[in-house]
Length: 302
Length: 302
Image (cartoon, rainbow over all chains, first blue to last red):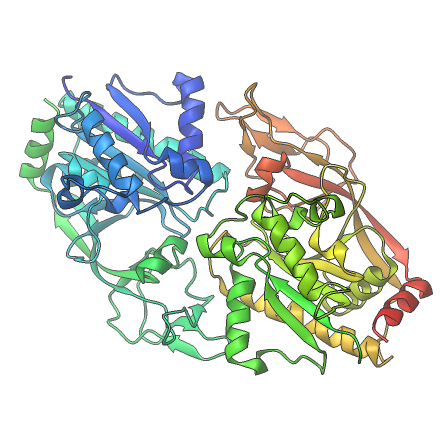
């Protein structure tokens, strides 16, 4: 196996379960079976982790755009860190990695899920292998001009694992166990594929990003209504026309007036208030698995 | 009514539901019936709220010890803020308040609950009125030499309202509604008492602090085991001998070996990791209501 895998946690410094698990894994390498895969594990944003904040100057997971990284005048700590990570583990780095798995947690009830950025064939192949084993949903993030510069896009293959609901800075049994399981299954599937022993599924189920909805806001931009209690935790369940989305403190309710077939994700993720996202809406599709995905993936790991 | 009440939220900057509700209340004064009470509302730590951190230099709710506040050489932003709050709203301040209600949220499943510091008769009288209306549990914090300098101790009467589980920095319908209700009941009971129309209960149920338990730690002081999933959320339920408390990533379980009658509170409060508290243990007692509590309380508000 000539390829190497980069495992990242703590890309956001207030998502502490992954970093805690890495620390434990350092002490006891047998906590995860690595299936013979060569891998590096790294804390994405150790300075932010230290103070328990998502980031210091700028969201690290929006700092990997080439225009930011290639700039001669980098001021934000996170853009400097993005360049560091690429110099160390990027395709042309000191320890070149071909695949990256970036492990996050979220205050939304996402369960264990994958976020795939765009439709890179190799990503879809590996995601399909994970989905066929764990049954987890996949959020295909694309066509969102406001959000760019995601970490995993800077490597030939990779995606985000999102686990929730996980309160910020709270060490939580369930989140640790889900992180551990998801990581091990990733390494197992990569190993099987590199040995040409992976059994790919016939289909891939994806939830494709359509749009995001913001909280109701006042003229100063302050949030004016909270997420309705009946909407909290309803990630991955299709919204029905008329179902409650937000509630003002005076009792007034904002209802969903859109298409019956859309599926919400990242409902009430605390960190997305500043991104004007109360939830994102997706469209579920079932795609036949394409042989070219497998070929693209196996080319990377052989 | 010659007395004034101080209502505080955002004493910890990552507990955002109270401050958000205050903002809404500013816009719409009818959100709460104040029952004719003169009150001030204030954000405890606006600088920490701005960045979403519990505090900047030092926990504001441990910064009210007289030795800190009276020092000539104050460095910590929170001690400066404590002095400011006392100069403004303290007994001898510009807007003297006799009662303070300090509204918090917690990642622990405390429900709506009160924390009373020590056994000041006036506090017990008001707490008994709230308990008889809402039925909520009361944590009597005393005899804990490691923790001191709580905000409410600097006013003649007052306590903390704790609402949870509430993830840090997450706006959440349930927490807002519980905050609103608890505040209104406080103002209602204070008003009734000041008009000599309060009906005091015959008993007060208290959970008296006994000791705190820390997470298992390694030789470097790092947390080595997470709270066991079966213990998460079990606040206010008596621990049974042999019940699981913590779990190491290798599966090893630490079980409770203490007294069957103790009741845990603040289980897995994220902010208490740094205070070496995984939970506190209390002893439940039912006290007869004493007339002197009522007299002490009604003296303050008349």
